[in-house]
Amino acid sequence: MSEFDHRERIEDLFLTRKQLLSRMGNGFAGMSLASLLTAEAHADTAKAASGDRNLNPLSVKAPPLPAKAKRVIFFFFNGGISHVDSWDPKPNLTKYHGQPLPYTNLPTERKTGTCFRSPFTFKKRGQSGVEVSDLFENISKHIDDIAVIRSMHAEVPNHEPSLLLMNCGDGRLVRPAFGSWTTYGLGSENQNLPGFIAMCPGGYPIQDTQNWQSAFLPGVYQGTYIDPRHTDIQKLVENVKNNYQGLDEQREQIDILQKLNRQHLEAHQKDAQLEARIQSYELAYRMQMEATDAFDVDKEPEHIRNMYGKGVYARQCIIARRLLERGVRFIQLYHGAGQPWDNHDDIEVNHRRLADECDQAISAFMTDLKQRGLFHDTLIIGSGEFGRTPTVELPTPGANAGKTNGRDHNHHGFTTWIAGGGVKGGQAYGTTDDFGFRAEQNPVPVHDLHATLLQILGFDHTKLTYRYAGRDFRLTDVYGKVVKELLA
Image (tube, rainbow, N blue to C red):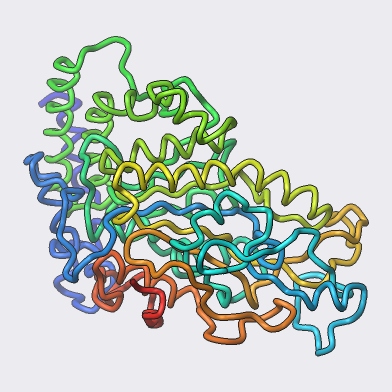
């Protein structure tokens, strides 16, 4: 026996903590880790990882209910766009400008002062007459297809938990993202591209990759991050191309590697991380054949590129449309890294600049979908993590440069808008109070929004579940009701 063989056999005598608990699972039926590692929980992914590439966990699945949309685009206004300056007109802010609110101020993260009128002009749009400010002159051209939910509310006035609540259904615990649940339930129509893509130019939003995490779902449902600042495909999608081997040579190499990985997988009780690794190798190989074409916006006609406009945001919207029409299931577009809409000061200047960066592009995206026959079965979402106060934020060290021309975070009431397949457009649903501080009529918590969106995609939100740690989890946790008035 060689020294290597002897060492290998000795190493086989030792178990990791995870392996030990897994092998003892039959003796501890109530142990949560045993539940995590059951073959049933990882059935689809385990089958795919076993060697048959036709059993891909991202293969298309039919939803259990009639679906009105089959793909999702989520425009995320990162940092908290001001609803009272965009989608929720409040004439009382002008009437009482510079005066205290006529009722007791709700708690805010920082100290705020008197009413602060909007520097933007609202007017009725389309045949429906829904009022939208001049920040979104272009998007509002589609207002008769848009449902404006003016009575959204979250749980706390902090970015981190509010982003996770909006994206993952829980602001504190590690939970799968909405996009992960969608690809888990529906798969993807293109096996050569990721089913769930998150684009954020210049880096990550607050909470980084947790916003598109798969958490306890198999790793194949994790969102894939793309930085659309880059125009070079090899920077846009890192390592997308092998400069030293052709596809046939790579296929032979991957088959050998996957065989070893599958043997390792069988010895480690269907470990979720190993399953995800195997699927990632397969996807990385397949992406070489399609990603270069999908991300190349220069292949678009000049009139289409001109319709979207210039800049990074316009480019990522074109990329998103090219990905959706190629079968990618869920795409989330962030407006810049960090929290660019977090305007504690100079809100007129900053909100105008940010809106100018995205208004034309989002409107063009919707027009493009209509022209290509994709609008009627695409679910479109526009939202931030919360809104902003109707009162002016008072000077705070390090927060607003000592200025009194911005707004603080406001989770008590804000606006989300939805459009496309399954959405009853041309309406403003729910209201905030007369000053826009708190959701008042028909309040919509985030769990109700998620329940409604899943209904549009063909799911009863109480039944799209995944068994983990001894219980069935879902995007809406133990909450949520469908807002039927939003459904077409």
